[in-house]
Structures are given as C-alpha cells and as structure tokens.
Length: 143
Ligand SMILES: [Zn+2]
Ligand SMILES: [Zn+2]
Image (tube, rainbow, N blue to C red; front, side):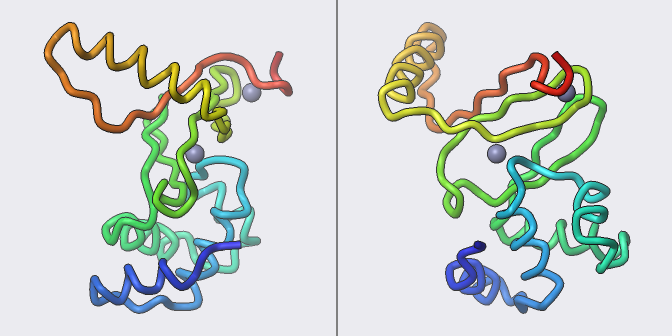
C-alpha cells in the first residue's frame, strides 16, 4: 500500500494536488516488485489512464520527489517510489529481457558495502553519501 499521507504532504508542499490518477500510479508502483516504465504501468493499470497523461503524471511525481527515475540500458526510463518512502534497496537488472527487480540487502551486508564503497571512493578523495547498486545478469525466467 502506498503511504498516502506523506505523499500527499509532499505534493501539497509543492502546490500539487494528489489526484485520483496520481494516487493510482503511486499505488501501482508500490505494488510492483521493481521500477516500471510508463508502458509497463499502462498495461498493469489496464489502460485506465491514457498513456499521454500517464507520462505527465510520472513527470509531476518525479518533480516533487516522490518518484525516482531509473535510467536503464536501452534508454528506457522506469520509475519507482523514492527511497524516503520505500526504504533503501538495490536492483537486479536482466540483460536479456531488461526487467529490473528490487532486492533488499541485510543490514550486515549493507554495512560491508558502505565500507567497500568508502574505500573505493576514498582513494580519489570522494566522500560517498548514498549509493544504488545495480547487479546485471540473467533473471530466473531468462537463465
Ligand atoms: Zn530476464
Ligand atoms: Zn527499486
């Protein structure tokens, strides 16, 4: 379920109404197992919102910071709820079918990863803030 209250607060603070269509898009993205493109959402939502307004809705939701775009290979942009809403996680990207799935990382692995990234970035004097990891490979359907 989409946490509607904090989403609505963010939209209102940006002078944007949390319309029925915007709620439906957020609900669908919270139901999804990973980032989704406009075309994928269009199918998943049984074409209940015209594709052109779906694109505009995604742009508005990205602008106010409740969605994060995920720029995959093949130039396809997929969207997902921002991490401040959905929690920190990483992505598994299938090089065959292009699917992108969310994967959670245990706190222990996350600590190890932060240590590793700190040592990689530290070598060039870069102070790492956040990170997103994309693991490329073949999904269960394609392998
Ligand atoms: Zn695949
Ligand atoms: Zn994700």
